[in-house]
Image 1 (cartoon, rainbow, N blue to C red):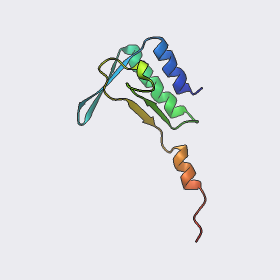
Image 2: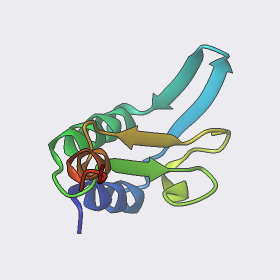
Image 3: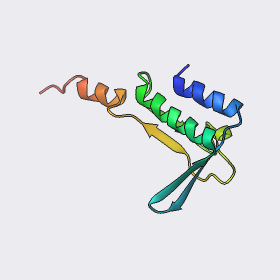
Image 4: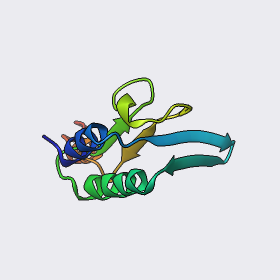
Length: 97
């Protein structure tokens, strides 16, 4: 199991919730208790250190919904670059001339 998945399961089991809302066209609110913000920080670190997956997606209406507080209107998509998908394309077979 990925470290990011373990963090999410642990946070959900502890009842940790975060609120994600768009405040205006240029600002996103990430709100939570001290434990909620620590969870987000640890999630970012785990994503940065992960070697298997280049992305983590949590949604208030999909995977990870147990982690969102009521009123959350947007989710999180964390993507580390360069990613394995990009590398494969870049290092893949070259077209024949």
